[in-house]
Structure formats: C-alpha cells, structure tokens
Amino acid sequence: MTQRTLVLIKPDAVARGLVGAVLSRYEAKGLRIVAMEHRAIDAEMADAHYAEHTEQPWYPPLRDFAVSGPLVALVLEGDEAIEVVRALNGVTDGRKAAPGTIRGDLSLSNRENLVHASDSEESAARETSLWFPGL
Ligand code: CDP
Ligand code: MG
Image (cartoon, rainbow, N blue to C red; front, side, top):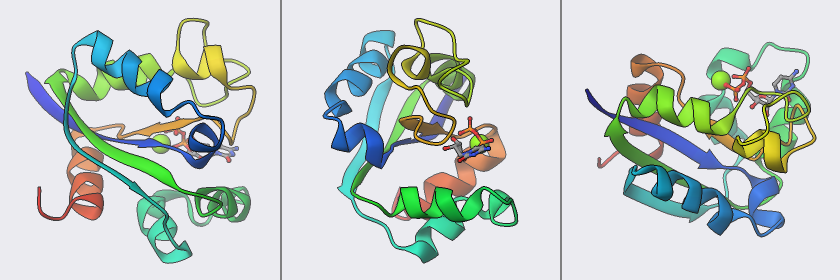
C-alpha cells in the first residue's frame, strides 16, 4: 500500500552537515520525495508538531532543541512508507538504536536523534497538513 509520511531532519542533523547523508538513505531505499522545505520554526509550531508530548517533563528541552536552528521538513512516499521510514530511523534513543539505522549509526542521544517520522496513518495525515498545508 502506497503511503506518505512526514519526516523532519532535525536541527542537530542540519548543524552537523548530515542532511545529505540522511536524505540519501531514504532515496536509496526507493522512497520518493514529494515535498521538502528548509525552515526554522518557532515555539508555537514546535508545540503543534509535538502536541502529544507537551505535558512530558522532557518537553521543554525538546522544544528548545526544535527551535535551536533550521531543520528540513519533507514528505516521503512509497510502499508502506510509514513503517519503512520508522525502521530506517531506528528506535528513539540513539544510544540504543541498532547499527545500520540512521539513529544507530549517527546519534548518541535520546533527544538529539537527527530525525522525526510519523508513527501512524493518523499522525502522518495530521503532520503532513500541519507542515505542508497545500499538499
Ligand atoms: O521520535 P520518536 O517517535 O521515536 O519518539 P517520541 O517518543 O515520539 O519522542 C519525540 C522526540 O522527543 C524524540 O524523537 C526525541 O527527540 C525527544 N525525546 C526526548 O527529548 N526525551 C525523551 N525522554 C524522549 C523523547
Ligand atoms: Mg513520536
């Protein structure tokens, strides 16, 4: 089943010069980029994106991180794209993520973990319309 998923290449990845390395993994897998934008976000946008997490004790530092510099937002399309991209990204904590995954190979942090990807069809629809209202 062809799906679309919302991906963020987070500020740590941009600051570290890893945008190309991350994008190339998605492209090499066969996923298609259907929208992409380099932008900085404010706290309001961070709160909207992370609506399910704003009450977490770790949310304030996550928000600070999300607004700390530019990021790259994109929509990827492909067969089972939601699950496929989550698998390419690896588990949340870069210290625990499996080698071979983006986080497992390139992140040593539970917060600065390089990438975001939608976790369900519902979140993909919500996040895609939040980031790319015209899509
Ligand atoms: O991104 P993912 O869906 O794997 O994880 P999440 O549980 O939805 O958390 C969203 C983001 O919050 C993570 O990707 C981390 O950047 C951050 N986070 C954090 O700063 N501290 C935690 N204890 C857990 C997550
Ligand atoms: Mg999540």
